[in-house]
Length: 92
Image (tube, rainbow, N blue to C red; front, side):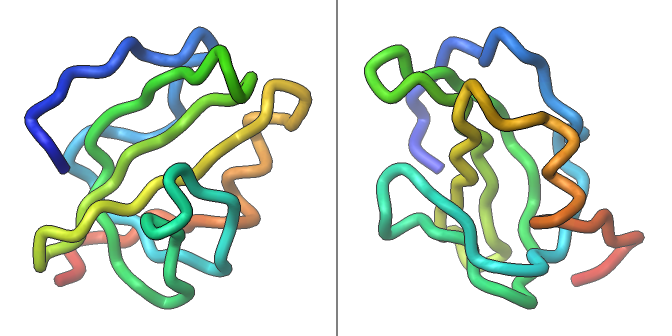
């Protein structure tokens, strides 16, 4: 992820910084080229908020340095993250 610092989302984050997660399915992303790849293991970095898009953005990275994001609209429940990601213990 870039060195840019983001303003955290108002809704908080269910993820732990530095923890690994396996993607279960593709999901909305911002920008689109950072879309989650099913089966990929990613590392949580931080959250941000887009007022323009009215959504929270959760930022992840891969071991190879690629950025991944998950976009969660304001009207979607935060608990829906379980449908998209699952924690992975010490996976590489």
